[in-house]
Length: 404
Image 1: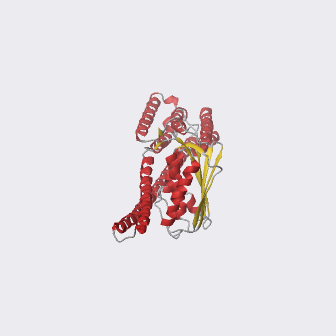
Image 2 (image 1 turned 120 degrees about the vertical axis):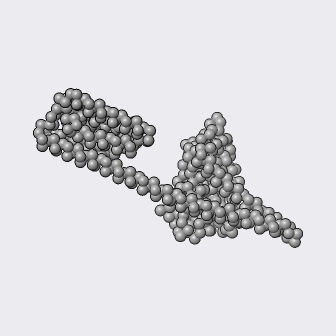
Image 3 (image 1 turned 135 degrees about the vertical axis):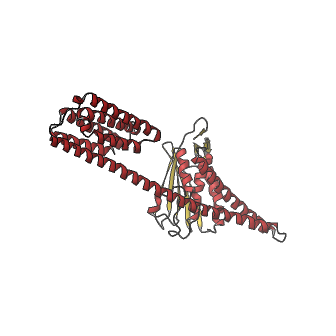
């Protein structure tokens, strides 16, 4: 948008010089050329965006006033500038400020018109009829280009938002389908093995084994429900972080030990899980519950998509940051999916993998939790070559937990 204004200001300056219009008008277009150039540079750097939007709006008011007084009043292209101003305000500003700016623009134009009626000599006359027609024609072309640009950008934004809305609806439908499956599976296991335990003829050894299966599926169901609740709390800004000091090595060893039971539940006895620490005395200041949740989700993800080989957990500390890496020898992730695997409800398509377990919220939750913890996550993967998820969190703790 600002680049378009800059281009038009430059062309207007050249055009005014060619037509031989008065020096003040030419100087004004030169001024606006420099002004739009400066604002364009700031926009490219992503700085002072709100302030620049206000300045651009004011600059059009100023251009309208100056053009009316010094570019032959209503006989010149001032009317086209008023039209461009109206379109600009409607598209750029919200409803309430747009109504205020539009009312100010109309009031400004009415005042200028009555001043011209009262003092017609102020606006002056064109040097020739040819220069007047050429100036008006240029005004029509400029107004047409700017309004067309606004309309095309609006259409493009609408199409993008519509596509995102359609995709979001589709992903929500897939999520509901997946969540029903993910909940039904452990519930069926809990119900079925509970009935077997209740039978008197079931041997005691079998009852103990069934009890463990029930416990594992209960934990799996509990983690799933907790993830869903946490996503809801994240999106409503109700998630509370509670910082404390804890031993990272002990926590990871416990998680890996518990997650090994998932290997049995999935029947993946060929997978070996390993931990790699620089020492067993590693203390981290962070939210222990959320760090554990992140690691569990990443290990769960590796277990689901790894059929054989290894899953390794690495920890190291550099410059007051703790780095965690979860590496597996699973099916890997295609390049077209890597940029989107952290999106809410997004899952690798079943056509690209032998199976597609999960709900599509685990990695999304990991990414959002790390944002709250002032950390980040990256992934390296190739189809058939496994995956490596690496995340870091800063090693610090506020005096108290805080709400985000």
